[in-house]
Length: 70
Image (cartoon, rainbow, N blue to C red):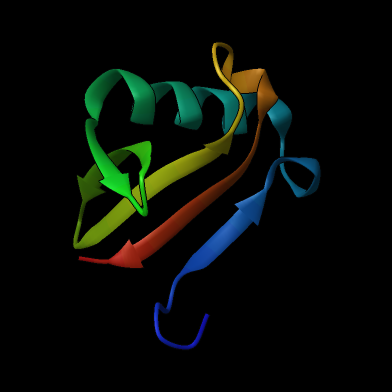
């Protein structure tokens, strides 16, 4: 998405336990904002905005964590 630069990591390419803890942290400490009509939970940290994508309720169903500069 050239008009919306961001980075991401896939759960299948990481340590699943670490990935799940990060996704849980985003959900527990973030804020909800809609993007194109879909609500996402975002967490701003050190100049980046993070958000996980997948299905709720469990983080183990998340499959991607994104980040973009704030």
